[in-house]
Image (cartoon, rainbow, N blue to C red; front, side):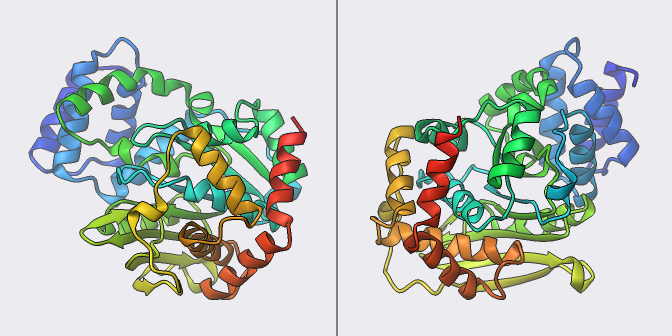
Length: 352
């Protein structure tokens, strides 16, 4: 692919005029974004113009395809591929500093023998990202692609540390920093869950804006995900990039057996305990690791548990392990109270 500053500036002007980019133009844009010699300011100008225009489903899908093609692919075993590989994660960005709900959920799903390919990074908008809290728990996060694939086969869980699988991102980071300094979000604020190098067949994705649910669900469809749910939970005037036990939830979901029709609904949780944002607050990696252990071994039976049960119920449903979210909630209760969830954590820690 040819690197041409004039082309990238032309695409910036096109986005400024409000005209969508074609898949071919996205390919050219990505080729320039990952090129070290292209000035960070030029990249930032393009990303800012694209965000101000508003990215289309087709543009987001094209960006995800191009960037996934540049990632390092782990050698996932055919036996694992024949099953439903799941990722459960949030885009981040809600800035509400809750504990690591999706990481706790991922470990519970692995204890149900669902192959969980957890794609994540260190903290960006919170105190402890998925990599941070897993490290504090003693779960390896720096596995090679071959080791991660083997862990997925043998333990139904592997962490895929994003910087290790997307080396070209180091040439995009300076432009993202410039955009942040300008107070401008970019398409990379919600690309993370779409770039899992293990290419999961089922995904539960949380977003901090209900308006993103349906567009990102359609992107997941386009990328070949067979079963998907994109969710946004409410808390007063704020939104969580998780299912919320504190208010209504917006869900956009699709399933291969239903012809990939995206359905957007409002869902009220079956939570019986009143909860506030303070009840779900997290801390640094060590504080959050303690929270995760207490939840997995059944010590914490308060509002944090309800949040995990709700999200685990949805994940079990998406993975095809439960008929409904409510049934998934009950299955998650059994996994925790029966000792399987904490046993999975110990298994992952001992097999270092």
